[in-house]
Image (cartoon, rainbow, N blue to C red; front, side, top):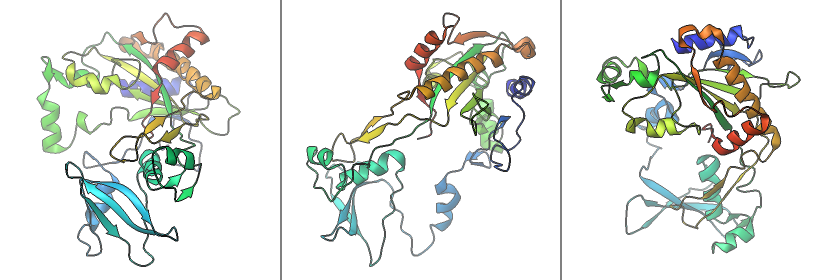
Length: 337
């Protein structure tokens, strides 16, 4: 009931309605349901959607449980092979996947692992590579730079109404409620098919902007912490959860930039990630407006019997300076990476 209420309240607040956020023939602003990568009640990834169907092809070999260590180059700086080892193999024996003539290597490690692998292979800022004892193949200072992520901040409320939040419905007598689990296992329907934040909105915090700069994710649950991730990490350790609802404001056009650097020449060692969050004041302003919007939505009379009491940021956070301090102390990734 809370998610449906959110849609009605968002429309009543003047945010507009949008039944398809991915229809770029119109503006993205408005409240609605997010489209998610899901099929038959289960998360649908690139592997399940495409790779699984191709596994029978004779020209495809998939290696799992491996860690790519290095892309190898010949004297002409042309890729010749890829070195990898097996996860959990204490011998650290290396294997080489050699390229055929005119073969290619596609790096698909995302915004973190791809620049890490490039630098471990000798492609990146020379001074940084030399500091890790890596032979430089190509001095490219831009590798690992310009990291962009979506920073987020949370507004959360408790509600006096019992048994209406998804988190409380997943608990029974202090343990896991078996009924949603059975419903999902037998029919692939119910609470466990939800991403937890499948309703939301896109908003222009400044009418003069060409497109929305703020995304609002609505969650039919009270946050366990202001950082946005504590609820997910601590849910299993919490026997009883108070009902509530939350708004996660996300700066989706970030101006801040971070970077990725090596902690080691070994790809098994996680790289150093500097998100650069809020280094550009415009991102802080967007999140500040997101906090204010979340409060406006959360306090509207249309919530009726569900209307709750603010938990985060809390009544002691009122001025712009106080809101900014709250954001700086609780900013977190919206999982764009």
